[in-house]
Image (cartoon, rainbow, N blue to C red; front, side, top):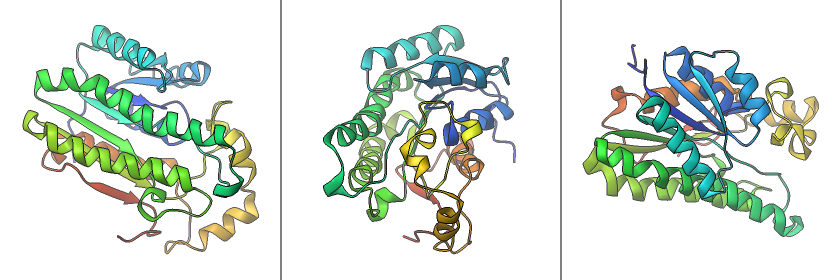
Length: 259
């Protein structure tokens, strides 16, 4: 199926590592022009070097509205439009709620909630003016079921789902759709992760090979997600083929949730 994404203008927040990296490369493979908007400038620049004609790296702090707006303005100057926004920036460290320090709660909320709000609000005026646009946000099955040791993270991702539905009701009249893709547990690969990635820090260190094998057994398909598993659904929802789909939540989790 031709998704007709060639020459579309795309922003992927958190697009330099892990799932975001796979999504950025997926759009590039379809011929789209992609802004890799990531706080890890070195990792984003390295990724952009793989597809220099299609990928552009811009250092972006999703928690800072001014940084987000600067990225949006730069993309509009360079590409002339923003057809697709993928909200992919996210952060967490698995820990029991009663053992989790406040600074971790605040970082989860700042990146996972405010990042979504800042970028989504930032592109809407332009999309409304054009009467066209796609916003695809990366949620989590944790936001659908309330995952053990991910209380605040579950809440932030549930917030992304609820806000996407509410905004979809507001802006559907302008031809804009908002949908959420919810991965299950999708470990990042160290070799494809920047220094600031959660999979290079404490989060990644919790999951050795033996632990990952145990977790995989809880999935009906008996394997964990890979970043590239998420890409086809994101591409479809970003395309005109899915123009009649909005306010929906699509799990890509190997059957971990079936709701």
